[in-house]
Length: 321
Image (cartoon, rainbow, N blue to C red; front, side):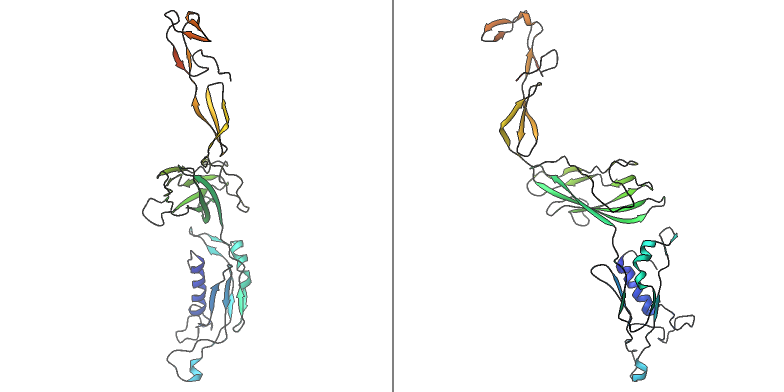
């Protein structure tokens, strides 16, 4: 039996229990209905348990009117999880999977109420990353990781689901929701990051800000442990950083000039930027300048023409404020 989802497994268990088991031990499935156990029902609870019921009352046999012929015999079920085979054809005992279904093991007589498994949990983890558009508006980029499979070299692969709140868009393929991109993250068997995709997103906030902004995802170096890593422990976010920032206003009382002539302004969003730069002039021969009073000097033929540039370059001095 092949299954890729909990619904696949639920349907397989119910179908086999009803129609695919040699209940009378004759060595084959009986077409006369003696091996049918159609009352068996398999459900999955909202919290993730598989629940099996095996009632003593079975559905009547179709086409029969005699009360003694309409009833089908209920059957006891003997349930046991032993092993499973992965996509490479390798048999694994999968202790975690077996443990989850341990509650279903053993004989399950007809008429008993229900048997249920432990919680079947999905290996997944999600984190929110703050990004900012060209207007300084904040958006949350949600990244969800869902474990998919073990690779041939013993590493593992996770599906990466990246989502932004609508009406923003990141999916430009024309297929699927425009606000969701699905990628992958692969890890080597030593836990280091092997590769991830995508590495960039085309982000259109659709709120009046610039469209098609490039968002670069930096999740680590291939073969290193400086970003995403895989380990035998619960998933956790240890650190994250983004280089975007919200809009802010210039604080008029927080302006200063550094020794290179940069006029630095501090903004209400906590950022400090150079909003302007003061130029500095130099001449080849300072002694050739003509003093005209008031701390002013005039260029002459002896001084040479002025050359404008940055403080601290080309023989110019630094700024003193």
